[in-house]
Picture 1 (cartoon, rainbow, N blue to C red):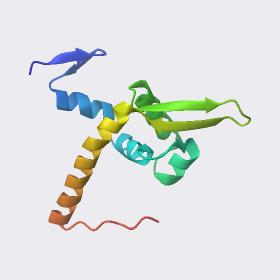
Picture 2: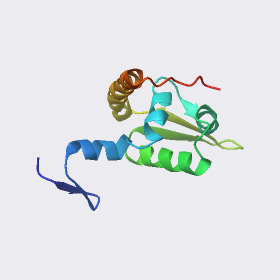
Picture 3: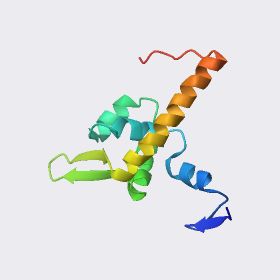
Picture 4: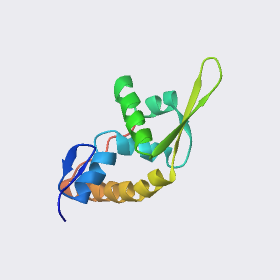
Length: 118
């Protein structure tokens, strides 16, 4: 496949393009947590304890801008914001699940023990 440019960035293949949308340390875990329920910022932060506030906020903004999640703000004091997965995000979950299962297989093959959640 020939290379292409999207938002002033050169891509060499569709895998690179897709991973730029949902790859990295935090986007897939965020999508995974939103796959079956709506969550508020604080719930996500609590469920992903090692992510910083700045990183969570930026990853949520990127996922929303790319159409993988939606954000709803309620006119309350203090403001309540909920995040939910979109149809595009649900399609990405199929891929995330395959990558997760492959990661679990590799962990087993390499003898990696999974830590229990604290």
